[in-house]
Image (tube, rainbow, N blue to C red):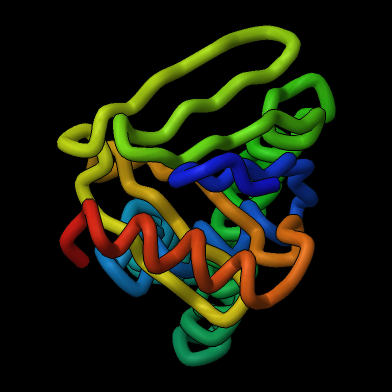
Length: 174
């Protein structure tokens, strides 16, 4: 794993690693607002117009029509949120993707190099904007919406994972 002043690790991701990154992004940016705003809009429209439509066309008394519209709106709210989550899971967990198939990451004095059977990428240190560390991962942000996920379980030992984090911290702020 270690070659001189560089540290290499073979990374084979699992869907839980993607979820960990999503949580880290939410902590940083408050992500997921679009789904909530859209669902709230559907909720408001259903309550407002559904109540009147139920009242006019079914001859239900107004409080019952309002209650039924609110229940329908709440159900639509959760359907919209669930559909956003499903699409996101499908997109992020494609088994043909590089992260789930695996790649080799090497961090050294020149930066971070990624190599897989499909691509090679080199990030010089200024290209790694920030590192965020959790108990199980290190996330190397290459821009505001993308990060390299480094699961600590991929290292041979906790000591090797700590050396990797220290090397990254020596070159990257945050």
